Length: 245
Ligand SMILES: Cc1cc2nc3c(=O)[nH]c(=O)nc-3n(C[C@H](O)[C@H](O)[C@H](O)COP(=O)(O)OP(=O)(O)OC[C@H]3O[C@@H](n4cnc5c(N)ncnc54)[C@H](O)[C@@H]3O)c2cc1C
Image 1: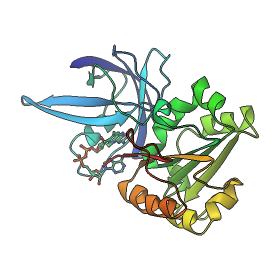
Image 2 (image 1 turned 180 degrees about the horizontal axis):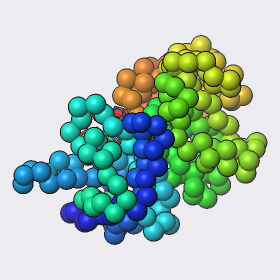
Image 3 (image 1 turned 90 degrees about the vertical axis):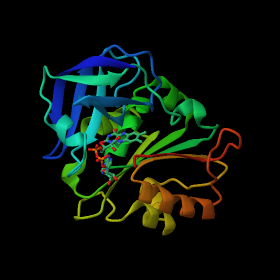
């Protein structure tokens, strides 16, 4: 169930937000899935889920994480340095994968904070670019310093200038090109569609939302009003979600 991983690299995006690159042998995974990271403390196991940022064909695992104040595990993960060991689940899990997303012309990838991570795994696969005419990435953060992996976002914009659209949503400061709005409000008043130059519809759109559960619940209400329904295995729809807490 657990295998020992070794931290081979870390990136500090700001004082709390960081990425860990870990060398560990786990069974093959699908882009969008998560692993568990864990520590054994006085015989008791503390384990938490972390989405993989790296695509399936890499020889390392990468997670984007935030140090949650008074959290049980994440402050310890934040202390890890290159060479340190951490237990990793020997397989990944999760259904927020493109194979579970029904056909559609436009793929909307909406994430808040660390919830953006699994989209990079998906966007590093050919499947995403082959399946959808347009891909919109919406990244909700409080401040501009909270944006991670801007290099990858720039790369997609350069490589897929008409297929890829990006919209940053920065709620706590003004920032050129970003919308100063929560995602549900921007969905409700049309400013997100306007910013991306894309229209949401049950016919053409498939939406994935990941991260803050409050954002997901509020946005789901707006999407439902626009005719987009929750995507369930037994009843396919347009909205696929993964709540981080
Ligand atoms: C499927 C899944 C995938 C996940 N992927 C990631 C990931 O890629 N990166 C990541 O950082 N976390 C991710 N999480 C959350 C992660 O599992 C932990 O809950 C988080 O690291 C906090 O753990 P903790 O023990 O430090 O805090 P706990 O003591 O467990 O405290 C939990 C509280 O921390 C807050 N919190 C939890 N996660 C976050 C977060 N990501 N951002 C802001 N506040 C948060 C909430 O208020 C929550 O109630 C994921 C969760 C799930 C269910």
